[in-house]
Length: 203
Image 1 (cartoon, rainbow, N blue to C red):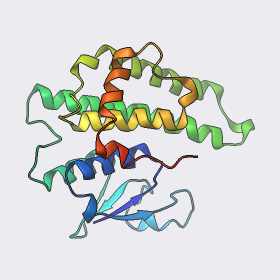
Image 2 (image 1 turned 90 degrees about the horizontal axis):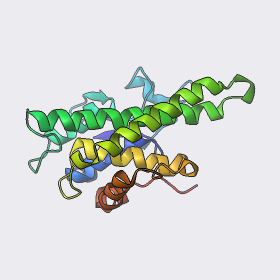
Image 3 (image 1 turned 180 degrees about the vertical axis):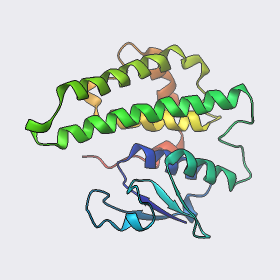
Image 4 (image 1 turned 90 degrees about the vertical axis):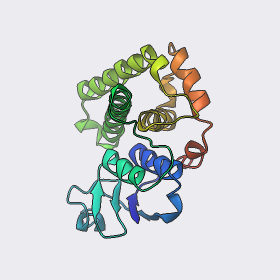
């Protein structure tokens, strides 16, 4: 398998965490790509020119991190990252959705800072910041429903990737303030080897 990726993407980190949790990391060839150049080779596999994009061993191209994570989960025989049908599954998928939404907003904020100052929108940036804050507050409220660190789900991996990205790009905003339950959960869950082995480069 080949994974088109960027080491700083929280969505790529979630996929790589899933790969480590399922024991498949060693079967994945890593292909760093720059999706921002017009002639990026990724467009041959993914017309959206987005990462992560996975090319399977039989040539099927998968994109969007939830799809890739579910595919990887289907390849191993150990405990599934996706609970069986029922409430627990919907909770895990919902946790993944809110974590991915935090990442979406955070990445948009990050990209806005890279635009020429005259083209930046303070209102747009503030909208994304508020979405992130509300979502973090919801995770704090629902911290009791977060999976224990020794029984990861796709929801907990997504949340770890999102919070790790906030520490990477928005550490100055201190997401832990006023969110003690979420902070305690993160401190324990971040000890997992899959999280440690997928850390972005220090800048």
